[in-house]
Length: 376
Image 1 (cartoon, one colour):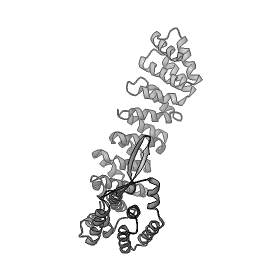
Image 2 (image 1 turned 45 degrees about the horizontal axis):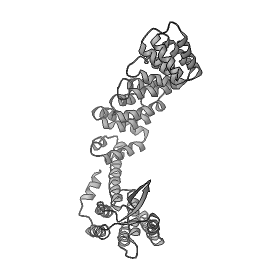
Image 3 (image 1 turned 60 degrees about the vertical axis):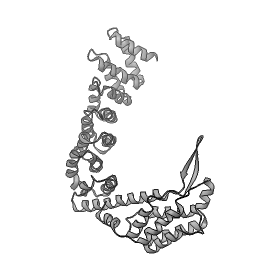
Image 4 (image 1 turned 90 degrees about the vertical axis):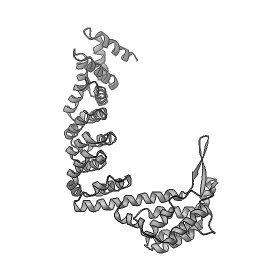
């Protein structure tokens, strides 16, 4: 959160607004109604409620925030409106305010409502179950707005850092999730040149704090930076590394993407996924296809290599697999080659399996296994 927003929350803010907000909680939060959905919608969106809600939106968007707060409190306590209409008006006003950093009066008003309980519920039906759900949860809207303002404040701080070429945002990154979300927004919106300036600092931070992987993925993708992708393959948390694998082959040239995926294939947590991603490159890169064929005998990644090769349904690959199947080398590699041909299930692949079964010199054990597959 920015220092300015921290300061706003710490001020002795407009006691009148706090009092009115708490009073509204006491008046309407104690007893909750449970209503039919259609009747509740009709009450919430009556002409009177709609007119008041639109008036508040006009005041807010015009920057007349003092009048906005006065009218909001008046409508929230207007006895001519039913409870549901009042809840809807307050809820919609809070969500509108959440789109930009607040001024002190709005911050105080929303903070006072953050622990408020829903005043009205509706019944929802899920199969045989009847579930009570809030119609308009003012407290939840207030908590969302407070969280969103923290994100916006952090985004503002990060944007200033990026514009200046400084890295204070990396310290802010370690504070809380709201700040991290704001910083991610700032990086997504930054100019390419600004990201280039930050690239080395992000790479260094990633080696010390794996959670920086989310920043590094943005920078690596937008800069098409092979070395930064390789850092992610080595240091990112498995969840982020898996997301990286899904974008690297579309972000880099095929050979560069292969180098990243090959490094990822040495890391057990993401090795299988890396091999599967290589399959998408193998059709346009003979070196990738060769690597997958050579990996069939690997105890950890050979199965994934077989799946990747099978997805190609390439007659030339089927011929290579048939040669491995009829070789006298690793039994593991032969089994994986047979698996790839079985999964391929193309005419070329099935012909290689038939040829193997008919070969009198082939391994009897493996022939029985393949024959069983072909009989299924």
